[in-house]
Each structure stands twice: as structure tokens, then as C-alpha cells.
Image (cartoon, rainbow, N blue to C red; front, side):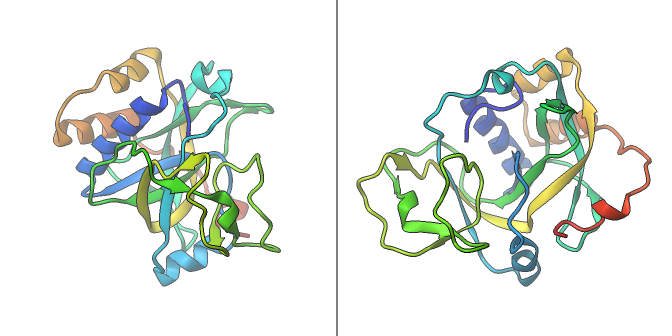
Length: 226
């Protein structure tokens, strides 16, 4: 985890904590890469999958610290391939442009935690004790940011990484987002400066997302994992 959509990491975690409180433990954490092919089946079977967020060692990219455009995502595709509005408490933003132009793909982890979200220190996380759960079970790559893993060895407590934030996957687990809408600078600042209660957060998130656009769902986007 690192800076995203013009917000530094501490600000993102504070925003996700507001979302968690307003959503009775539920929060959406935006990620840039598509889910493992096993995720949809795991979500339908409701198998418990823990989420470990570890702070990235590299500095955030300039495009994430200061994007030219920021969008809010208004809908998601659930584990059954149905496009739904985000819950009233959820607010997922991202930069609005990718290398190929306007960003039209983004994803999110649907998470649950009954404890407040805060960065913890001193809990080691050893990537070498895990392998990717899909494919041939390859080791975790240096460029992998979000991955579904399985443990294959006992973790070594001597590691450079920490388990900084922990939660559980819920709902659709790792979902594709849809229907982005560009945010104005005033709205971005309003989100960053918010200090209200849970009801006020829901009102803000609902207003920022606005009404989902009326558009046909293409055949290729109806299913999450094809």
C-alpha cells in the first residue's frame, strides 16, 4: 500500500477508517490489478481469506501523488457477475488517466474489520513463505502489488516487511469497479478535509458518487472472471 489518487497513505487509512465505521466494518480498498481467477469461487463459497496490507518500500509514483485527474468509482461487479452500486458508505477514488488515456479499469478489495484501521508496527510479514495461489504457484514477484497467496513455509521473523493493516475479505472479495466520474478540485479538497461523524460521511460519499450513469452493460463486462 502507498499513496494513491493524490492522497498520502496516512490520509487514505484515515478515510478508510471513516468508511469502515460508517459501513459497520465494511470498507473498499482500491487496487490497480485484476483479481486472481480463484477469487470469484472463494467469494461464492464464503471461505475466510485474511487481508494483509504492507507498506511498499518504494516511493509512490509521481502520477499517484499528483494525478492530473481524479475519478470516483460508482459501481462494482459482484461475485455473480452482477453490476451493483457501491454501498452508501463506500468511496473509492483513483487517478483518472492511465498510460493509454482515460482510466476505465480499476478494482477493489471488499474488506471487513471489527477493529479500527491503523498502521501497526513490529508485526513481521515474510513474502518468501508464500507463493501465488493461482497458476504454477510462482514466488511473489518484485512488481506484484496485490496478490492472492498461499503459505508454503514457516515465516521468518527476520524480514524487511511488516503486516501494517489487517482485515478479512467479504462480499465479492476482490471486485472490478465500473462507472467512473471525474471529481472537481473542490470535491477532492472536501474529502481530504472531512472531519464529521458517520452519518455525515455517508451523506458526503453519496453526494460525491452521485447517481450511477444509465448505460448498457457490455457482454464482456458482465462476468468478473472470464
